[in-house]
Image (cartoon, rainbow, N blue to C red; front, side, top):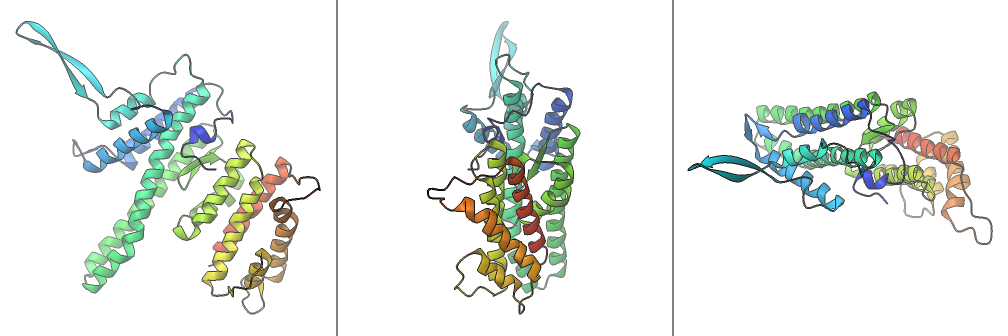
Amino acid sequence: MLTDIFAYRYANVPLFNEMTEPLRRLLVQGFRILSEQIQPFYSQGKPCEKGKVYWSALNKQLAMELGLTDLSKTHFPSTTSWQGSPRTTMHPYTDERICSNWMFQPLPVNCAADEYIKQRLSLIELGFRKKAQQISALNLIFPNEILKAELGKNSYRIAGLQLANDDMNKTFQQNVDELNARFQQAGTPLNYHNGFIQIAQDKLTQQEVETPFWSLVTSDKWSNVDVDMKNAIDLRDSGGRDPALYAARALESTIKIISSEKGWTHGKENGAANFIENLGSKKNGFIEPWEAEILKLFFSKVRNPIGHGPGEAPMPTLTPQQTQAAIEFCMSQCKNLISRL
């Protein structure tokens, strides 16, 4: 399903016919966001440990995916004179420079622009994903840090921790917003969300449905929803089988999680319809009866036919337009339900 890098997920989906000036600028801008904002290699003029670890991991991870030892040459020569004779010494490049040299090397004559650009977008994707994973780990331990400060009755420490955590998350989201704005400026149909660059269908849907949805499913609680929806989009873009089924899985997971979190799950549910009833019962009133009916109708008329073997009947299929409508429906419903918590 979801593969690690953009270049392989979209290998069979032509996106870039040629290297244009807007695309060249996009690659420069994306790399500068990584090297200047996400994780600079230098701090106060000296290589910092976080920078070394981050850029070494990026170099090695993408090189592994592309079947290389390193993305580009690891050393460069310098020649000096010693006792009247030239003497050549090899010096190491930093991992940031190795990535930079590879990122901006001219388009090779035997390499298609589509492949070249996708590989470089993969570096940007991996860089953002790695930072997001670091932030997620810090957010996970943040409540314990606050608890320690509260036990120590250190109000200044509490305020400082909260300010630092808020600033960290806000700054990263600003980086994400900037990258997505750069995608739009370059005229590409791409959007970064929760570790992956994927195709966005249209600007209005992206603004009103997709972006709010991805921001709501960032926590571990919604990880299955996040992964299934990403799989739905990847299958849609690559012409894979039954992308709407994965979107329906994401919606079903959302309904089940809410039912469980609210304490309404009783263990006798037989399918999605029963969990929908948990949300829509008169007693619980999380959704209105008409909303429950719409959800049930989607599962009975769309999800069930493509989710079960048809036997001797013709294999049910959806048109591309129906597939897109199903994905947008599921994404919109997930967003609507989660926002009510």
